[in-house]
Every structure is written in structure tokens, then in C-alpha cells.
Image (cartoon, rainbow, N blue to C red; front, side, top):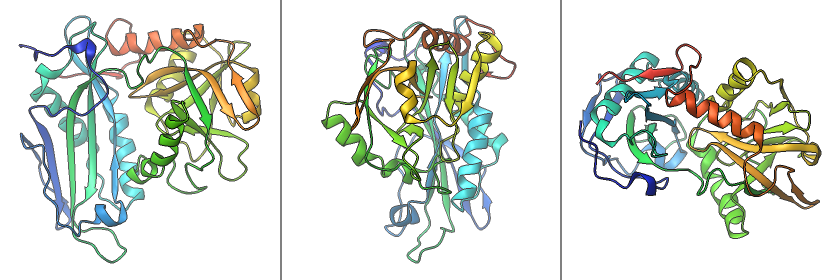
Length: 342
């Protein structure tokens, strides 16, 4: 298989149309079989529910070329399950989880020449998305839906992702108690756009959001979960019903406990505890694990002891181990690495 002629090591994290995408449609109470298409465009009525009532959910996962030349994805069954939960919460018909995985396989296989070569630092990002496509003017769910998966080669989500980031505490709330913070709904990200751009204009990479009820506890950032390492070397993972259940975060917890033998504590984390932490990092599919060096708040700036020059030692080991599993260099738990048969 001939790879595309791309400067893989110069890729950013942005959209690039590839050769094929998968699309299925829901109408009259059932999903179509779905098929690959080379058309990157979707034609919609002006009354499509997604335009008016934000009936949309999505997922994010990646494909990799491993050290031995295989093309694999990482835990796609978990994305299928999470998307099913998101769809149900938004009154959308869940796409069957087994067909979700098969559709991911089909799209990656059809675009195999776009999967970055092993060792380039680039990956193939996979974006499944579902929208309410049917016309709906009254406040109600749509009666027709589109499920689509498209892919693209990408570089790091944060430029210089292994260099520590500067964050600020947001003045805004990310999600309401008993709201939609625990699903991957497009509306959650729409409300984060203004706070994120404010953070960028102020010189910060991202926002940390605190719990909306008391603004006491750490939740997550606009686009990733957050975790800490305390001075005793314990991994501290914030826990909340309004945090998106990141597949990367859950995988890192397993890596920490079962592979690296670290002590892990999943609990609510007060913001005033951060000053006593040794390391901090953002985690998610796109970023994998990106270190945090400083957090700005009205009470003052917090500088993590790990510094602004490099990732802390425990976060570095976590990142290297997880990416090693994904790239086939390290043996991981059964079922995590899903091979695409070409």
C-alpha cells in the first residue's frame, strides 16, 4: 500500500478531507445499512433539527500504524457505547454498537493510505457524528437522522503537546448539575467556545471549569479531562457526575494501577488542593496526555513543581506507556488494540 505524499511530521490538528467516509440514515423507525461515500458534503433542509435545537452528538478516536506495520484502533467498542449513551440522552436513535465498530473498520480500511507511518508522531483521527437531519420547527426531536464517520491525518492537538501548558480558571460553568456534562453532545462544546477564546486571548491554552453548584471542586477543561499526581506519587483523578467519562482517562487509570503499580484515587478534588500537587495534565483522545505547568485564578497563580519546561516524571511514564500500547510496542490489556484487517 502506497502512503499519501504528506509531510507527516508537519501536520497540525485540523480537518483534511480524505477519500471515503461512512454514512447511514435513520428514517421510518430504522437505520439504513449505510455505505461508504466519496462525497464530503451533507445536504440538509434549512429546518433540520440540528440547526435549531442542537440535536447532535459525536465521538473521537484514532487509528495508528504499529511498530510491525499493522493498522489498529484503540478501544472502539468504548466509543460505540458512549455514543449510544449520548444519543439516548438526546432522544436520538442509538447506532448499533457492533455496526459502529464495523463502520470504523470500513472507513479506516478505505483510507489506509492516509494513516500516518509509524514513528512520525502523527495519527489518523476518526470522527463519528450523528445529527438530527429531519425538519423540526417545534421544540421536539427530529424524525430523521444522519450518522457519519470521517477521518483525517493529524498531528498534536496542542502545539508542542509535551511542553507544559498554562491554564486559567473559567468564570463560566461548563455543565449544569444533572445536565449533559457526562455525554459528548455538541451543545456542551458550543457553550465552551467563548470562554476558550477568552482564555486564548489572555494567553492561556485552556480553561479549568469548577463545579457549577459550589465552584469548589475541579471538573475538567473545555476539551479534555484533567488529572493530578500528588507529592507521594499517587494519581489523583477528579470524579463528578458532570465530567465526560473519557476513554483515555479510564485507560490511564488502568495503566497506572495494573501496569505501573501506582496508587490511584478517584474522588472529588478541591481546587485549593492543586497548590499541593506535584504534577497536572490534561488527557483525552486528541491530546493523549498534555502536561500543565501553571494555573491562573483570581486567588493567584499556581505553578506546579514539575515546572514549565517538561512533563513530570509520572505523567511522562503514563503517556509513554499508553502510547506504547497503542503503537504496539508494549503489551496492553486484552481487547484494547483493535486490528483493522486490510
